[in-house]
Image 1 (tube, one colour):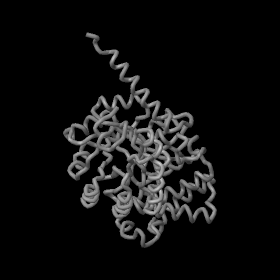
Image 2 (cartoon, helix red, strand yellow):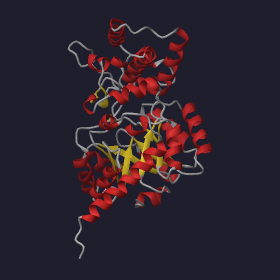
Image 3 (tube, helix red, strand yellow):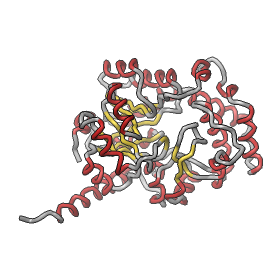
Image 4 (cartoon, one colour):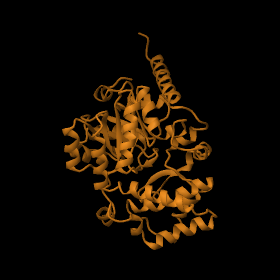
Length: 377
């Protein structure tokens, strides 16, 4: 499984693990893969603490950081980041709608101390989902020499960020849902493309992985390494991605059901109960299409009379405060979390090591099946 991207980044197998959990990042990297910490909702101070911990536990191995640099966002929120409480910029109509949905569902408010803590963490983190906020996260990441890859999750990165990363010898990657996006990313100076099919969790487009990967490889004319993302949790799918021309895979949802995941027992059980068709694309979480678990809360925003979605970061601030109440109340009927279609294959808790071992073993089995089909003479 050693491809050129492994040689460039210093990992042993081209299995890239996107996770908001530092433990997953560490365990994947220690198992020979390449962990990437999802930092979009971190404040710079929190990111600094997380990266210091990873540095101390990853045995000197390289890893990456993923940030969101949106091309569409609330300009007033961008200007006021760090100056005022961004929650104050959310229209009263939207606050009232969310409160009504939760009240009618019988979800209690958070205790005052908990509410203040959650409110502060969400506002500080979602404030990073603006171009200037993303710059602060990139600057924090560059203080850590073991960070060898920074990935832009939305839109082409600004020229100053590209120059900043190149000057430090850090590879720049980007997620793309269309061939045209990949062309723009290449022109912007991106060095690694993650072709993210619609099956993926989180922000995703409408084209399936099987179709998208070769299209993006053709679009960049084979000049940039491409990873396949979306619907990948098995070694046979890794083999398929390599056969399509990708140099590796990018996985996210599969790590949510591991012992190391940041999710608690209630949240994991919600994932294990979910079917493939329960992973739907909705804009309620961030204002942009996100594949997430379908719930009464996500669907309330699809009903007639619901207010229009807010631009990042304000929709995320509004939604995630409600999400905290749902989790505390243990309301599975209202629980939504970003998850890809592979959620339907996850039925019980595993470990990062188990997932890594199984994917590599299945990869070898897939190659052996293919080899058996070749003529013997």
